[in-house]
Figure 1: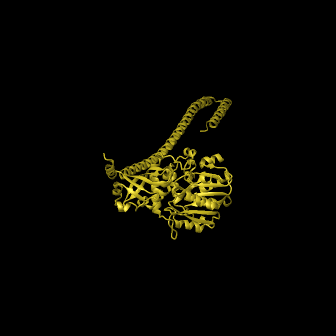
Figure 2 (figure 1 turned 180 degrees about the vertical axis):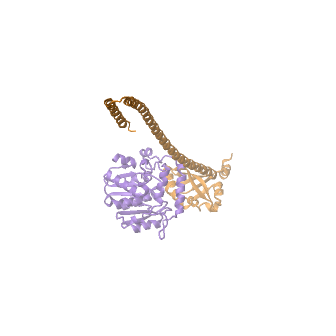
Figure 3 (figure 1 turned 60 degrees about the horizontal axis):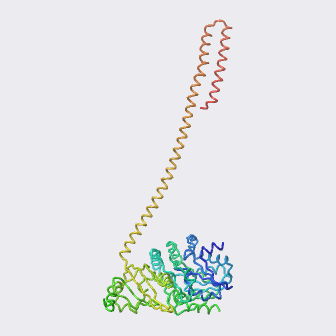
Length: 265
Length: 238
């Protein structure tokens, strides 16, 4: 049963400490996105990395369009993984759409998760009457067209993931850039579910201690959205990094690590 | 070849677009081809625009969530399709290649990017995709029609088999009826012949005793005939 899950979600476990940190990637990538962050927590935490079904090296045949028509499908997978690996008091680190997956999982099983760390969260991307998500329907339509037009591009061989400046030759072999070599239909389906979703009402149900890491300039999940998330999650703290872009854990890993470490003390 | 002056000439006459940007996306240099492609002057672009300024909002999402992570993790990326926006607002399809340049300690210094204008290629791609879509639809229709035909053929085969069985049955029945008719005519002929002879005999005889004797023989023949008829009715079941 565990073997099946490991294959299904390409689960990687590093370290043997008792405290658990579970990393869940967002749209457009896979667990490799955490590679500049995890080495700094490996000594104090058991690191669990997964690929959401349909992304990275997950089991593509397990992608059921009905199940994953909402983020609940992925949230259930996370709960199953935690149960199968006997994880307790999990600190879940999430990014972009997986922050909402984390929300749904923690609302369903609050006792399982001790803390949530959300990087660049957004409960809804499309503007509403009184809500600024950042985008109109036509913007999301354009995005979906770009997703569809790029599967040909991604079928060309990608360069292998580079080593960081920490000397880790053993990582170079396993870290093959695998993301976006997905089935194009799955990529389009996941994009629709992510960018057409609305999880605003789920924020209020979340009681878990939450850290929100917000990039000061983020075109996808703006500061305004970050503040909205902070206001709607009862036990949440908002930290704004002096960074640009939607992936500070990639573009400014040191600042991100610092913010996480400060929160986990 | 004087590489100093010729290199600059080469850079600005090269038939493909190039630009250089900082880690935050700000464009710090570009060749002439890129400026001509986007219809901007050098002053309007250099240190003024970022890569994302050439993209629509929807494509910015793709750039930030897919392009940048891939570039950051691999150090290089190629053949990503975007629609760049010219100064006047019109869009044109491109393929974007980028590579990060870092110093010895791994700090990202700047990014080189090449832009390939693919309007004609895109039209060809769209035609191919449209043909593919039509072919798929036609294939689906043909598959459905084929399935329908298959099931009709199966039905016809079944019907044919049923007809053959019915035919066989009717032939058997026909044989039975012929045989019955043959036997019936023989089995009826004999007693009727006897009755005719006895009838003549009855007419010939004049004495009452003789007549009664003949009549009792007639009764026997009639009994026999009656039995035969009952047997026929029972077994024939016509």
